[in-house]
Length: 391
Image (cartoon, rainbow, N blue to C red; front, side):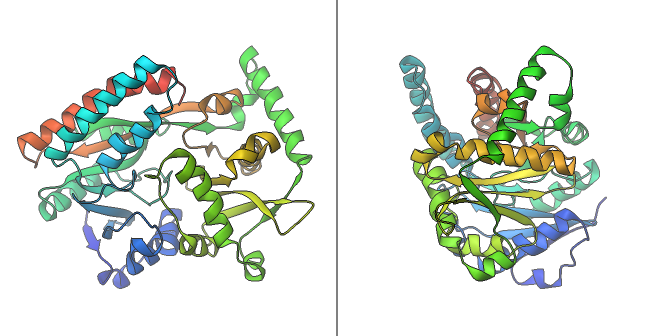
């Protein structure tokens, strides 16, 4: 069995972090949030955090004791009900939209009664797209044993499992955990546009056109980390641009990062921030992207811009083009996260499903029923919608 130790905000001072990218991300980014509390950095998250050390691997944990449902990344009710309801409201087909809204309304009350919101999230970095879960099967089983004893009324939800990580997905499937479709994500790899066939020829032309557009963009692209930050503090501007897109346009159940979160991540050695500045006025920040590197890939963290201007000025196109350019230069695939599926497919990004794996054997029969019902609906109906609508 693997050795498992849990650290909270008091005991975490004794944790020795491994010299890995996950260890660096945990020490540099996640540790201060554990110590100072989530509410200091994310306005709609007020939940206890732990860090689990499993042998020499560190894994972040987010605890929901059942009362919090304001953020899709820290609450099953917020994600599978509220956040999805916001997406359903954008569906143009009226009959489908109304049918799904009625279904979601019914499920909200059922899942509330069955206490689906009482969970321990494993590998939850409080980022829209986190690194792959890097645990072996025996480590997963040891962690489950530890957590199910300490949290006997909580479901244990493992995040960061995707179809592209074949060995990892196989390991998780072997544990017998309940697998639930979470969302569809897109990965771009330069090898995709180098294949010789008709579809990749179109994607290759689009990629080259995008790169020309990036060179001739009306924006000045500037790194915002390190010395640049010491001169000017853009944390408030970044927070405003982020909220304009993720919170106002998409959903209030998105992570509501505040100015302190951006101050924290701008000075982190893990994240890369690139700002799109108006060439006519270099101090005017029109948009930004951020990304970080895991052991296996580059991961698109955030994109922010004014929603009304993005389509006219090509801000989003510039953002994706820059990430693809970095992917090619570093010879690593880039995880472009979810959303804008058709746009990403035209540039050669490949869709794959991301899953949550849930341990429920220690819960009451009614709680188990709720999770199995959720799995049935999302592994059939939701999966079909994600595929058909290219979400």
